[in-house]
Length: 190
Image 1 (cartoon, rainbow, N blue to C red):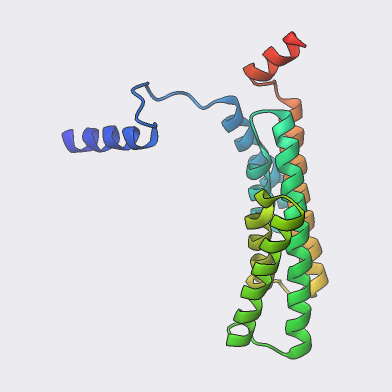
Image 2 (image 1 turned 90 degrees about the horizontal axis):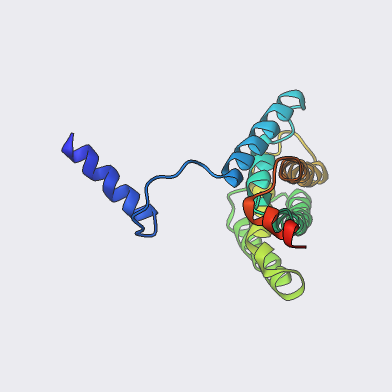
């Protein structure tokens, strides 16, 4: 019993920025995030199997922030980076189809790596660097993920729409549920 208690004590210290405050209840952002993921998963029970609840749930988690303004910024970055990644994912799948490349071939892997470079470079140079990683992830998810008998265009559009659904649900939940105490104070001061 002492070993278990010591383990949890060390675990708590490692994840609490070495603060000595007790374990807190989940805050409003955690609850909103969980609710957004739940709503995404429920919605995807009704959609065709080509839709990907994982993509939408991840988008909802990324879009949820402690303030509505921050959620809009995160959502915009997420949609922008998904669009860039989806476009490059579409291009690489079309190149793969036209040139009859195999998924695990050296040439395809070199092409993937080059496209990751392009997505990151374009995101950092012209868009927001925050989205560079997300765009690369979307590119790879489209280019090497299962596309379930879809055309490259359908795969890219589906990925973007899944992200749009997740972001939309996160924004809706963040808008409908009560404000965080910080936002409430800002509204009172204004």
